[in-house]
Image (cartoon, rainbow, N blue to C red; front, side, top):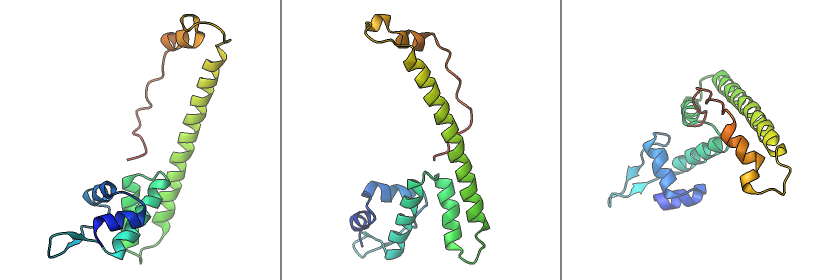
Length: 143
């Protein structure tokens, strides 16, 4: 199948297929006599696997590791469990960060009694005056 057919079958677009191919997540396909890429069912399966991993907010590095394990089915699945446990830890950390953000936004929202002008808005004044926390310094999980 050609790239457009693969993209349609996987529910994605052609640019995404090309991106994953350049990123090394899907193997380079063979070429037809007319030099068109010729994808197989294996490409479709791999693309669906990647899309499912991305739907779970897995990074490209995590996906690469899982694909490595897919490509070596005789290996034990302990590495899969370890990767998933680490990903769950990342999700838990992000939930804590988002809960803190929610509390900060709720506190900011409570500063407004409503009915005033933008020039008198306590939220706007607080956004100018408050000290924002520096980024955590840890890289973003997604990649």
